[in-house]
Length: 205
Image (cartoon, rainbow, N blue to C red; front, side):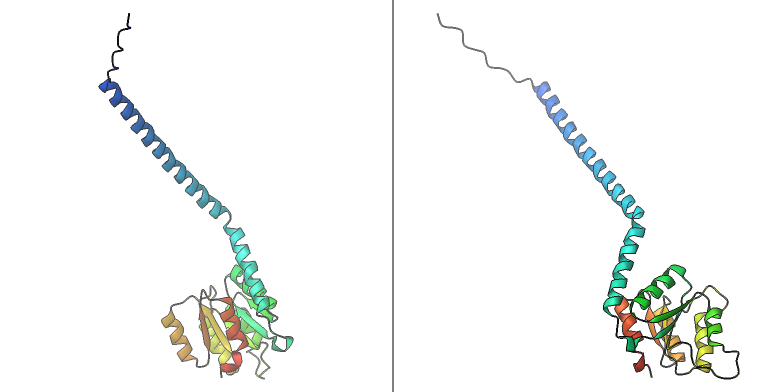
């Protein structure tokens, strides 16, 4: 006797719909978890970057010093540089880079301090203590960079001076027109440009 034919399995439409909705919900949940994970990773990277800012700055500083050494000239080109920069960290960094480049640097944070080095109060003119002067215009003390330039120029009109400042381009242009022969580098500037201006100071006049 033949076995009765198997009845076809009927599709339970409500169950199928539930399965589709469940798969959609799982997919959406997975997508949300992925987005949350991406956000967490990005936040972690930002936090990592913040924590390692000093490390990155140190690496950039070491690279800059290596560039300074690369651009160093012979001992005949070594100069006495007067550096006026009121930001202690930047002043120390520039000092280190310039010395790595083979120059002798006297760094000052205050305008009155660097003017004292010139002994301008003496009646008899003395030789300039520096071969070139690097001056920031905006200083935290009572004497700004332009006042320093004015007083030094009165006694040493031929002393090469380079302005290193973050003031506007129009401000720099005004000052350089007021004091012909002065060069200017607007912050931030490249190290090789600083060395090019310093070591090419003979073209100022």
